Image (cartoon, rainbow, N blue to C red; front, side):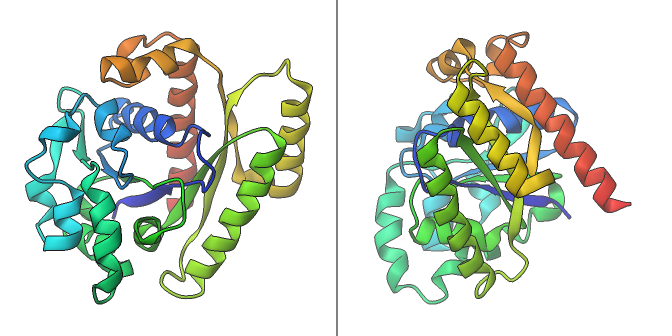
Length: 258
């Protein structure tokens, strides 16, 4: 059975979509089968894989609202290395219409059931806010990967997200937990970043990934070319960091399965 990981943070600009795109490519590079689900109406994850979000025949919106099969909306990306369930601005409509639908928070979870065994990992890019789309992502997931910058306001944001996870665990998804906390856009020369990083590891222990994602120009450039950093410049510090993260996740999952 595949591991479903929601990548979420209620604070924007923390590297959530960047992490989803680059971690997916890195996991695929380690010969794992990966499906990416773009639940963000901005469609940045979809564009990050070189897919025109404005020219989609079917998207995750059709899956959530119309009951379309996931297999009819999935596209192969990165030269066939991984699969994408794309999303676009139509998700804004879905966000409104889902409120009136029965069992609205379980739509994504039920849609993924027929394909979950086909993948080692399913990564869900959630919107940077708490809405019905994010709730669908968290309800479908086995765990939440939380990307965050090491700054003061990020600590407040993570507290809010942990409260949301507790609420979902208490109702729609009792098995939901924190899969890991990822430090992104890290600059070791910044004293505040170093101090926040220390507080994170002190408070959350081994739930904080050892891998740290540095600030890196190549990571920032890659979306404009419609590809993950690994395909843009596989030797850049950012690509190597996400490969290290993929290795850390694979080792963790192997150890958990023993």
